[in-house]
Image (cartoon, rainbow, N blue to C red):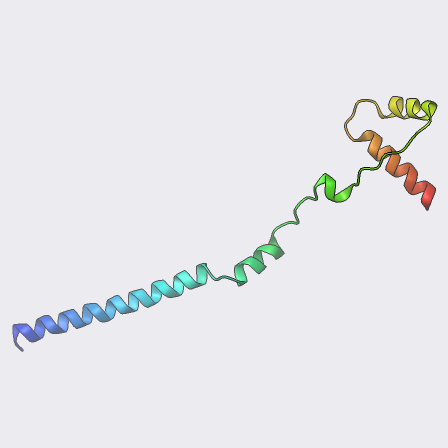
Length: 96
């Protein structure tokens, strides 16, 4: 076999192994970065996002008698959201 033939065979083997490596890399890339399936899996595995306050509540304005609002203020204290909780609980009991 001549030097030219040996060199040609060597290049062919390198090209074929390079093609195999490229195919393997493409398969690995496709399996890691598929467009649809990972998104669906993430939705199943990931916990649901916490709803925003505005998604759960709607602002409403009402007139409340002075003596009732004083009692509500003293009952609720300064804890954030306590008035909302008390009003919602009271309305739920009243409406059920």
